[in-house]
Length: 147
Figure 1 (tube, rainbow, N blue to C red):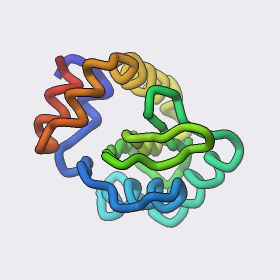
Figure 2 (figure 1 turned 180 degrees about the horizontal axis):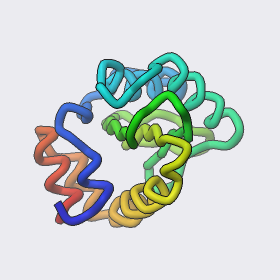
Figure 3 (figure 1 turned 90 degrees about the vertical axis):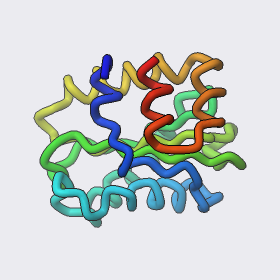
Figure 4 (figure 1 turned 30 degrees about the horizontal axis):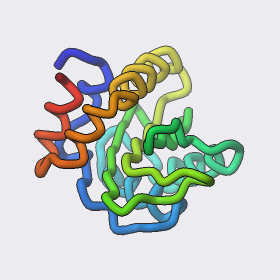
């Protein structure tokens, strides 16, 4: 894959049908995708830190995309889970359709910034978001980001 962000996304870490309609529940639902991931050392801690970060300032990046994230000792490596909500989840004033939950080891801040920057640039494109709304499998979701 061409980007660091796309390398971090694995088919097993993507949900194309988030059921939650409230922000907190949606963040926890997407985080739940990686609950049993080997790189997650303390799932409850990760969730608490994701929610605490969201309380400080919304992680909505615009364009219907949010990046709930935490720099934490609760993960061994950078962990990214992605969720799509066709109906949308309200993050403050904006409806979000794509939620990328990111857990980053404290010492990997630079890698995190590169990954989020890459994802943000890709998702800024209306064409990319349109394709992501239509894909039917996690593999197609990854391919759409890799174009």
